[in-house]
Length: 303
Image (cartoon, rainbow, N blue to C red):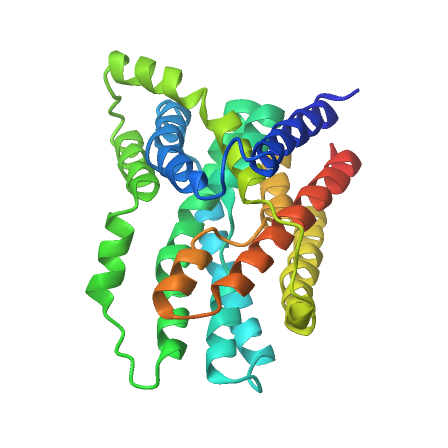
């Protein structure tokens, strides 16, 4: 058994454990809120600190930031064009769900187990660009179509980004890296201890939120959404994989990064902006399942 398949099997077991704990009422889905706060505000930032502390910043890593931003803008434009005949609220809801990826919670545990620190550095830089899409573009689209007389508040969006601990951790450690400054050894040591918990806790959280019951009335909208997100992401990822004159890790990041699940931020945004949160939750669950099996299939082919 390859290390790639082994990591996927371990991940499936931990996700299944989280799902079973929910099914047997040992844990409840609402417990996931507290667990997600720990992951996003503690274990993930600790993992970012450890991963980026000794990273050597080069052109390919910076290009990943740009790639995530450009692709987010491109896929959002395509999505809004495809949904132009839908009602304003459906257009806004689907439009904000098309761009943006779930990297910190979904991709990091798998990447860490397969490629280790090097993989995390590449996917981490892709996530830096993704953060601008998630906290900027997605929120702008959702806000714009949520109300006829909405006024976009740039200060509010900037404040949202500044309040994101993972995003600010990325910014700080990247800046320190550029300046060739390093965090004190005790900070790195404590971060290493905390970061070990990120993988199992993230996978358990995915299991807690997993749901296999879907409203059939959503079928048409879901099919259109999945077609845009995965057909375009997969086609572009495969094309770039074969034509780009870059290293393997760069190409792996784009190929797999473009088919990751939709961002976890779409659910709180849907609640805040008055969209159908049940639909957002359904789509989020489906993208987790589809992305998981796509990554496994493609990973076995290329690695």
